[in-house]
Image (cartoon, rainbow, N blue to C red; front, side):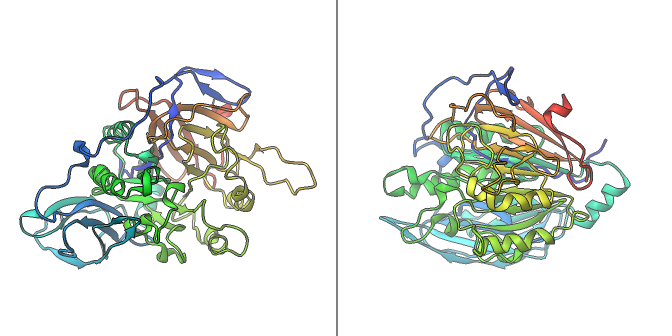
Length: 489
C-alpha cells in the first residue's frame, strides 16, 4: 500500500546495548543471548574525517535544525562561524521554485573555563507550507553552503487521511546515538537517539540509522550529546567536533532535543542551551529544558530529569497544565521524552528516576501516554505496560503491576558513547521488563494510523534492515487492546 506522508521519527538514544540475539526466558521477559564483543569504547581522534571543518574562510559549520513552533510551520536553523560573525541571513525556497525568501537570525558567543566559542547563529524560518521540500543556504560568496528539509503533513489533513483509509501516515524512527552515549537512536516519529557521543561506535550507530531502509524524518534525541564533560575542563572543543559529526543528519531533518546529565554543566553558562535552541515558549514553558511540540500525528512532551520537578516547581506546574491540552483526535499518539529511565533493570543508574516517577506517573496513566523514551543507561530495554501508582507509604503496595492504561517504557541509551556499554543486569529479570540487551543501536517508531504503530530496534552488528526487537503498538486512547509481549506471544 502506498505510504502517504510517511513520517519517520528517529530517536537516537545511546543505549550501550550488549546485544543478545537468541532470547533466554527469565522471570520477566527475555534477555537477549547475543553477546557483543567486549572492547573498549574510545572517542574518534580530533583529526578524524567526520570532524573535518568545511573548506573556506568562515564557512558555516555544525548546522542543525529543529522544530521552531508548536505545530511544525517553523524551523530553527542553527550554525557556527569560527572566524567572525559573518552573515545572520538564511535564504530559503521551495523545491522547483526560484523565488527565494530570507530570514534574519541572531548571533551569540560564550566562554567556558579557558574556551571561547565561535559565533553561534540561530534563525527561525516561519510560515512554512506543510508537506513541502525546502532548500536553505547559509554563508556568503564561495563559502555559502546549501541544505534541505521537508515539512510534514498538516495535522488535520493527516487525520482526514487516517479516517478514510488505513494509510501509513507517519514513520517514526528511534535510536539513541551515543556520541559519547547519545546514540542517534531515531525513534520513529523523527528518530530516537540517546547518549550518542563521538566514539567509533557512535559513528557506527549514526551510519546504521542513515542506512536503515525505513527513513526517518525526525530524530527524537533523549539526551547526552557530546560527552565533552568527560574531558579536562569539559573541553568544549568536543562540542564543536560533535556538531560537525552529526551535521550530516541534523542539517536535513529536525532533531528534537532532550537534556541529559552530560548537558547540565555551566561555567558560567550551559553550553547546551547556548548551542541548541528549542521552541519552549510556544508551549508555555518557562525554560528550554522542558517543552512540547506537535509533530504530525504525535504530541511530544519533553521533560528534564535534572531540573526541579517537585510540586509547585515550574516544571511540575507546566506539566500539570500541559496534559489536559492534548487533543487525541488531532494528535492521537502521546509520546514523552526524558533522560533518566523510570523502569530499568540494569544495575547502572538503578532507581535514579524513582522520585520523578512518583511525582508524575499517575498523570502518565490518567492521560494514557503511549510510550516513554529515555536514555542514561547505555543499553537497550523495553518494558511491558506497567504502573506503580497505588503505593502511599503506609499501604505496602509497591510492586509494579500490569496496566493497559500505562505507557511502554523504552530505554535507548545505546548510541555508542565513550563510557561504554552497561552489561550488568539485575537478576532475575523483573516481570516489568519485556526485553533487554546490552548493545549499541537505534530504534524506529512507524505510526501507521491512529490505532497502530510498528516499533523496531536495530543493533549495530546486524544488517541495516534487520530487526532485533519489535512490537506492534496499539494506541492507548483509540485502540486500548492488550499489546504486551505476553499477550502477543
